[in-house]
Length: 588
Image (cartoon, helix red, strand yellow):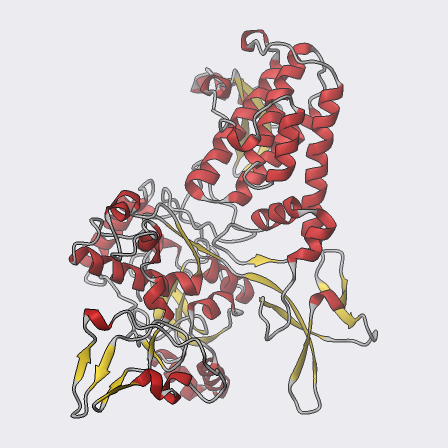
């Protein structure tokens, strides 16, 4: 198998092989079902976007693989999400720490074994999805306690020592056909002579401009049918193919830096601005575009046109937007797809769809499952109708909250309504706070326990949301943290001058932390809270580390893995004091 995460090796619970893998072929010879499954997989697309969004399907081959370190047997599945062209066509599956493996394992009842602790050092919650962050190893025998890089190195060294593994770099490169037989695109600056010569155009023959008076139809590129463009005289003809649009878009970031220079491709401003701090793109676009852009950038570097080695410092690959699909089978066997907005769905108490009817005729339609939004499946949702109903801030909040940016976002009307309710609550909280009186000076030395608790929650939220937005780019968890702070403000019933000062600080933090996500609402609330400058120009909230210190902490006491008590202990208490407190508890 090939893996990029040897640190998670002790969490492997199955192996998945591509339908074209020798083990799959061997299993197909023994089973007509597996043979049919492999044949069906061969018909599907292999693009990154399709692999990311298609339903994860597989079948047990009957083979077992031996874990190289524990010696345990794990089942081998043939799966539709493994490609023969990548690595060895076989992957080790760690469902606790890989979302694709998690979806497959939960579908087929395979064990989930967490081996990476969360940021608090605890076993991560994987009930709703895989925990994909790097961290400290747990449940990994002799490798427990190692951080990602140390674990990577130690496990790789162990496999090398046992003769069953090595560190290897795999490249996912495919040949790039840069020419297209079409009108759109940059003309290729080449001409052909009467005796088969191929010659690049000279500087005085450049630039080649596309003719503007063209008829574009289904019969191919109009340039081939335009002798006034292609024929240069004396038997010489111009190339009528154009460059793939990736050719132009693979260096535009450098051109942006000096777009007003009409004498050269780039000037010294490109070196001032590059490399780009953060590159965001869809999965299909990012992977191909990233390859081409890196190739172009290194080419420009070798020609002395830029100084930097890499075009981008950080990559964020955003997920797809997915939605339910509905169809009917037509007389000719094809499918007629209906937009979700035109369909009424009956759901169970957990929100799962039971049946669906087309609103125009009241007749049933088939449910095709959840797929990426596309014109072909007619399941695109126009956000404008939601914006008209709830406002742009609500739609922005929903899209940022529904999923981390790199995962698929499932469109949900009820989710949009939930986002709207939360924004109305923030508005109501600010309005009620302003009506309650004028806050006093925030004297942190005079705070009582409840006031300290809310202030601590405020600064914990600032710390978490700042890290989530700035470093981790997980906007959904930043929003969840602000929601928790809003809950804490709702429970805080103190209208004294000092109490109002503490709740004012909390509400201002809520408004500023949400400002990048819901700018219109926060702009207005910031002004209502008495600030003249717009929220967009305000200083991002700073963490007061002193506010984070606790006088006491809540400890959870377990006996043989069962919860027996929750204790309040002084933050300064030593081990003996805490043990004594626990032993004095009746349940313990």
